[in-house]
Amino acid sequence: MFSYKLYAQNKKSFTVVLDAGHGGKDPGNRGNNYFEKKIVLNIALKTGELLKKEKGVKVVYTRKSDRYITLNGRANIANKAKADLFVSIHCDAHNSNAYGAGTFVLGLHRNNDNFRIAQKENAVIFLEEDYEKEYDGFDPNNPESVISLVLMQEDYLNQSIEAANYIQQSFVKNLKRKNRTVKQAGFLVLRNTYMPSVLVETGFLTNSKEGAYLNSKRGQNDISRAIANAIMKYKSSLDGTLSTGLVMDDAPKQSVSSSQNPSSSFIYRIQIAASTKNIETKSYNFKGLCPVTRIKKGSLYRYYYGSFSSYKTAEKAVKKAKAKGYKGAYVKAFKNAKEVSITPEMKND
Image 1 (cartoon, rainbow, N blue to C red):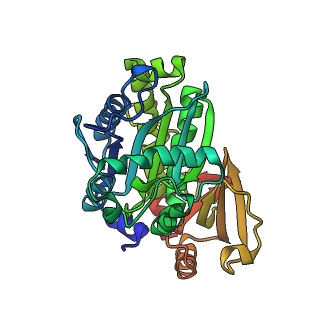
Image 2: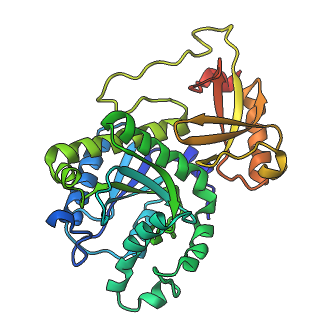
């Protein structure tokens, strides 16, 4: 298994795999007689068209038409593409009038609702022959089966939560959607992807108003733009450009760089984790690393190791964090308590 951060730094382009859930003999949910498989395919294709216009972005689809692909087959496409990010797009259903958008990463579900959503999406394996052999005896109806899934994505959990948070915040801030927050649950489609991976529930087809919105051209355009914007912000958080979103949208605000203001002082920290949990910043909670700083933004807590006055010193500290098991650790810069872009001048300072 490759080191995600080193791989991302050495790539010429940022590869995104967009996975339209369901397809072919698997229609997805039929809330209000809509077809989930058609709606999510439209959203995936529209998202991809937006991203293709961005510099340095490569888009790969798991499907571009109404065809059935196994869950393992979707992961194989992403792995073969050596993707930097995998985004699986779905619509939810419920027997109540529930509404709103939510994003998920692989993990142990903490409540019955999260298990229900994962159970529904995982049940598609029953359409496959020899599914018990193909998925190592995995049982979508058994909560204990999920435990074995979690270890597969552990190396990428930090970045997966980061990407999910950007998507969730884009839904809430740009589209004013009800915030169903970033959650963890046992989605089989995320198990075998060797990169940060997110599953998006764009809304509830079973809700008459929201279903009509998701089935409309306007709704699909809105959702695809929100996802594309979030993906570009996530990409920018990795390469230090701090883009505000799509280039075709409003011009991004420029961060103050050391070349613009030589007297500026920057603080560099090592991001080691991101979580919806508020964890006490004691060294025993972070494999002995100290000091650890916790910063909350939206519904997400980010955890940083150390505080350094130069980028080069911080880069050395990244090696220590990775040796402790935080393989996705990377440097972020701050000025006056606000995150700023890392420029080439700062790296050479």
